[in-house]
Image 1: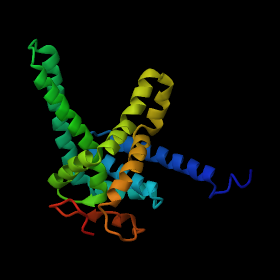
Image 2 (image 1 turned 90 degrees about the vertical axis):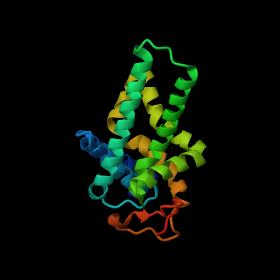
Image 3 (image 1 turned 90 degrees about the horizontal axis):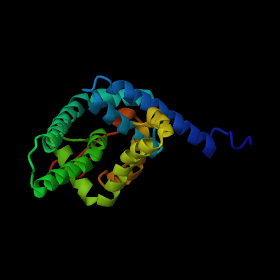
Image 4 (image 1 turned 60 degrees about the vertical axis):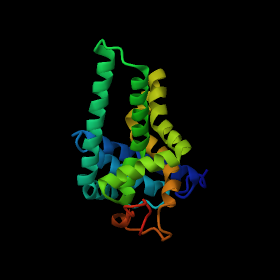
Length: 227
């Protein structure tokens, strides 16, 4: 029993990780309340979570807010662009359902296909923003490229975000998970997948211990890390 309760035991490390995810989820929730800060909050969350997945985490709260501040401007611009796209698609759905116009199936399928592609791209955007320094246009291009090149893993990442909502819809008691880990839980599962994808883009250098240094630049032309 004493060995199981040792601070380095798998049980204690797992409990510590759960506690970190709980704290991180609370931070993201608070920082998302103004809505306009959702992009910066999600970027900061992925910054911390990727370090967790790679067992290189430092001070959770300090690392979160450093990334939040450093990425605030660009992550916010990306988020506002995403909000604009969401608004357009909400408008499309309302037109399809309430306009009384019968649209050709090809148009409906095309709109749905584009929405799926954008959703696939979206799961990479804030992780890329958190890990790599790049212009907005290149971050978006790289996100789409990674989504298509790594399609099976992209689908798994989407499942990490969608499955908890589906379970919660059918089983109301799962709502507790959404409340406690609705942001950090799915993001952690996704990070376990995209961490290996990102390693292929990173220079073969030892990871720095300093939270401020956990980002690298990417070549704007081909999306490769230039260290």
